[in-house]
Amino acid sequence: MAATKEHAPAEQNDKTIDFWDAFYTDLSACVNGQPSDGNDLEWIVSSKPVVLDKILSLFPTQPQNNIRILEIGCGVSQLSRCLLERKIRQQGDGKSQHAFDFVSTDVSLVCLEHNRARDSAYIDSLDSCSLSYAELNVVKELPPCQLHKYDVVLDKGTCDTFLFRSKRTQKGSEAHAPLLIPLLNNVHRLLRRGCRAKYIIISPRSKLKSVRDFNGFASVNRTRMSTDLLGDAVLVKGNAEHKPTHVFIYECTRNDSYHPDTDEPFIDKGLTTINNDSICGKCHMTFKAFLGNVHIQDQGVVQWTRRFSNHTIHCTGNSTRVKQKT
View 1 (cartoon, rainbow, N blue to C red):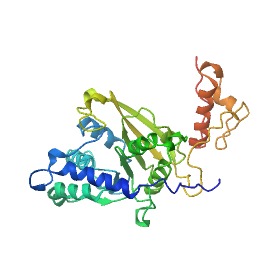
View 2 (view 1 turned 30 degrees about the vertical axis):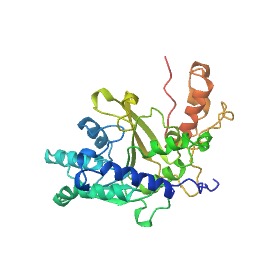
View 3 (view 1 turned 90 degrees about the horizontal axis):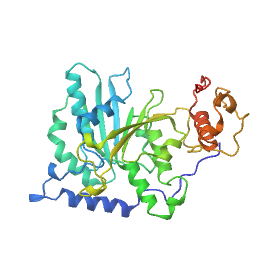
View 4 (view 1 turned 60 degrees about the horizontal axis):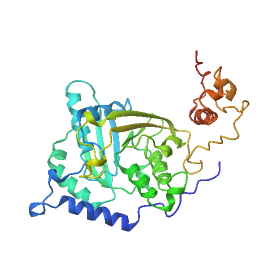
């Protein structure tokens, strides 16, 4: 495939970083200028046990002792700490013997210092597991030491922020938000090879088209959770009138055959070129066989051709004929 060009303007500029520094400076302000847990902001959904347990259930099970988790765009969230606390509690119940190393990252040094001060005592108390905070601009070139290092990349708000920013600019007229190309490619580079590493997104959005169509994922599964069971869930603090009715957790499994430096990032649907003789290059199933006895008009040409396009991307080479409707 032709080499992919990651748009030069699609990155976090200094103005954006200054905005987040100022945002978290205001958020952290309290008596005597000391950080306060009461001022911390959880985007989208709070860290209720049911949310934590669902996220932890998606972590890959590995034979090695240490599982490495990177959170991107952490802000002043306590998600990583809450997940680690929950996992240590579960290990105390004999549910796991792995050590977990969490690294929470952001572009804002202000929020990172806030988090380190807030969690310093807890971090010092850890034994086999670890929690740390580090600066990372996830849409810029990654340091070599970060490549293929993590079993899980967590995202609660970063992907949504880039989508929101694209919607407010002319860039949003493109099929996929430009910032999502370096974001998703870098997530792929961060994840380890050969272990079904996961990119886990917590989002209020019921559809993430760019994530769904990204060639770097072998599969994308979605879980819907009602916010009535989860407590407070807001897009912006104090904006309760826009409280979503559901929160969605996306489990994206790394596609090890994808090469971000050379492959096209998104599925080329090619909807107008698919016909009965179109064939999957991996399992050699034709589109006609994929349909089986289902008439293409039952759910529409676009729906079925989209399904076949997705199949050709994510096929493992041993697919069988789709189940026929009765």
